[in-house]
Image (cartoon, rainbow, N blue to C red; front, side):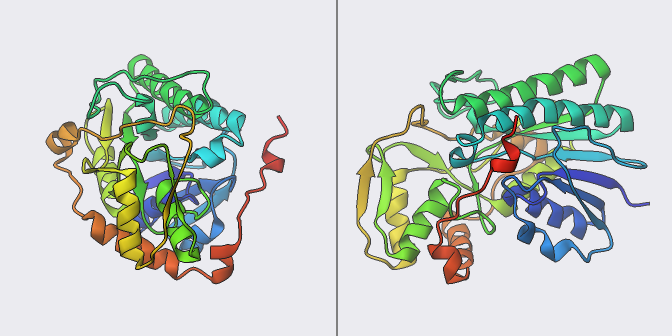
Length: 329
């Protein structure tokens, strides 16, 4: 009998790639999403698969799944500043109420649950690189706090269920991930730079550009999450690429990759924007025998080819997500 897995946030960037992996491995996959930030087109290719079922549902409401359930991957959440600054309450709710609902479902079904945490739990870190033992430097009342604190609470309630109920839990602290199916307008640096380059616009760098990031290709991220799910470790594990680069140098890489001659312009740094972000993946190497295999040049070429292949109306249309039906309360 095939194992059944529920993947929330299934129509999102990372969630849809996880659906691909588990469908291809023969799992009975139930995808769940309310399309607040996800796209139906991300999972359209799975609709005819006999081992894939989709349920449109908001996980902040009671979640019901018929029959047996063996695994849950909780990836439902806005994940980019442009989204969670527009829907702050919904971001907090999916990390709190949504996680509570799914932990309750996991308990009722005796299922193992993996939650998608984030490097944002470290805030603007005072320790570099960041290890799982670092408690973070987070502004709870800043504009980014709605996402940071939602994820920190998510980790806390997950560990409470693990300790009090003996629930099998896994926590992935996900660092910047990129690849096909990212949204051009999601506010993150890779689609922003690539979209600007393809439209012939100057590349916008915030601050002096000396802040650092590290980027993990989506296939590597999925493999790390997959291995973590089937490990026997219940505490947080960093999953990301430790190769660090400044945003200014990265902008120059994008100009070279896209064969454009755009200028780099500078704007003020947003509030609480982290100045350093680099994972220490020693634990993942030891526990999961995992580390990223895709070079940045390889991954960026694949990602650029994806964006370049989008219809021109997608490239030039300023996509503003309509959140009106989700912000009634």
